[in-house]
Amino acid sequence: MKLTDQIQKRLNELGARTQAYLYLQVPVDTGKLKRSLKVQYFLKPNSMGYSFKYLDYGVYTNLGTGRHYNIKWGSKESIPYNLPSFIGYRSGKGTGGIRPQYWLSLKGAVGLEDFRKTLLADIKEYTKKKLLK
Image 1: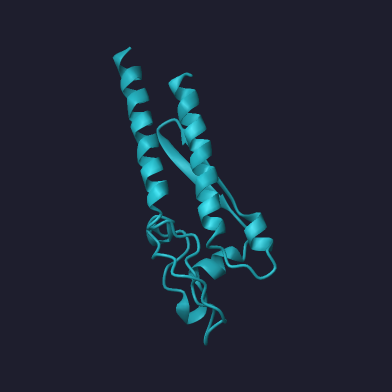
Image 2: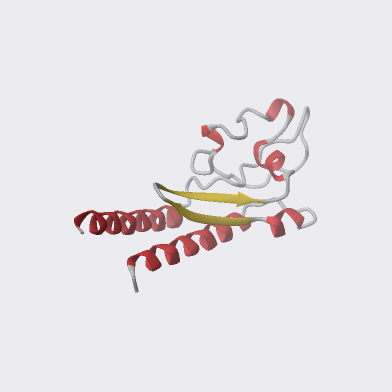
């Protein structure tokens, strides 16, 4: 198997593992949000990226609203690896807004982090081989 194929396979597996991990954390009322969650990792010419897709209201259950909204969506702090750890579902809307659930948090996802490090090592190996040609 070519290294580029191996890297793409690992990216796909990382996406599937991340999605499975987040499925355990997503708050479920009707199940629509959980069913809408899709995670994809991809390679760009100079970097690796990922996208998380879910219903629009997922951002409110993840980061909270009103007086509970202290991490702005799109900020460096809102990146899944930077969010506070998921500590379980907190029921109720709370006074003055929805309490943040941080269900998109990947902090503490040890298996995912180890897998991601392996993938980065593969990418470094591929880059080194390309440079030595």
